[in-house]
Length: 315
Ligand code: NDP
Image 1 (cartoon, rainbow, N blue to C red):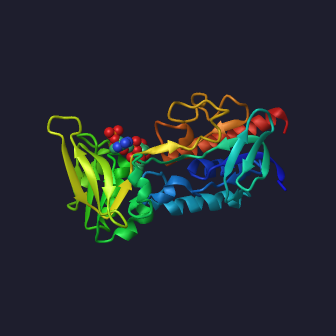
Image 2: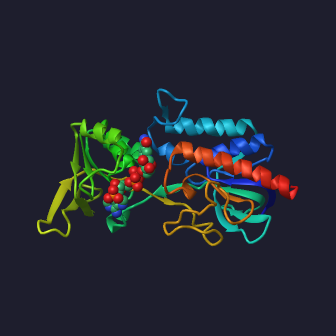
Image 3: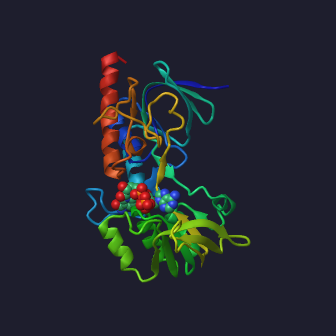
C-alpha cells in the first residue's frame, strides 16, 4: 500500500543546487527530505577536475566535491534518499509528489533542483550502438578506449574537456564541430590546440555510425549544403556526445511556466516560481550561467526562501 508522508521541505535533485539547499534547509531546522534522482550528485559526477569552484586552489575531483556536499548535508540531518520523484500535483498546498516506489509525499515547500541531462543528436544509430561505442559521458566510459580512436561531438567547454580527457587515454581523438569555430572558452581552446593527438574537424556533421557489433566508424558530411559539400568517413571505436543538455523539468511542466527548451521560469533574481512555496534552483532554471557555483548559490537562496515562507504561513 502507498505510504503518505508529511514533509516541510522536499528537495528534488542532488547536484550543487540540491545539496546546498539541503545544507541550508537542514541548518534552518526545516527537516528536509531530499530525493537524489537517477544520477546522485548530478552532472559534476561526470566531470573530471573542477577548477573554478572557489576554495579549491588546486582544483577538486567533481565526484569528490559532490560526495563532500552530501556528507555536509547529512551532517546537519538532511534525509537523503536514492530515488526519484515521478509525478507532481502542485494544484494546492500541501503539494503532493509521488516517488518511484509509489509513495506520496505531502510537502509544504518543494525545491526543484533536477538539473539537466546530456543531449543526443537524435540519430537512430545512437540508440543502435548505445553501450556499444556511443556514450555521453567521457569520464564514465573513456577507460574502455585506451589506445583506441574516438570522436567527440560538440564545440563547447564540455566537448573540449571531454576531448582533453580522452586524449590522455586514446591514441587519437577527433573533435567534430559543426561550425568554423569553437564556442569553448579561450583557455580550453588553447589546451585542445596544444594536444597533438586531437584533430578538430570543423564544419562537419554526423550522418550515422557503422560497425558490426559495435562502433567502427562514423559517416560525416563536410560543409553541408555548400557547393563543395563532401562525405567523409572516419574510423573510430567510440563516439562521445558533448552537445549540451536538456533541463529535467518534465515532471513539473504541467504546473510551472518553462521556456521553449524546458527551463523553469522563476521570478527574476530569485528561485521563486509563480506557485508559493515552490522553488527552482540550479541548472533547471538557468539557461545562462549553468555553473556549479551559481547552482549552489541559487540552492542557498531557495532554502532561505522556503524557510521564510514556512514562517509566514506558520508551519
Ligand atoms: P554548450 O551549449 O556551451 O555547447 C554545446 C556545443 O555543442 C556547441 O558547440 C554546439 O554547437 C554543439 N552542438 C549543439 N547541438 C549540436 C548538434 N545537433 N550537432 C552538432 N553540434 C551541436 O554546452 P556545454 O555542455 O559545452 O557547456 C555548458 C555550460 O557549462 C557552458 O556555460 C560551459 O561554459 C560550462 N562548462 C564549463 C566547464 C569548465 O569551466 N570547466 C566545463 C564544461 C562546461 P554551436 O556552437 O554550433 O551551437
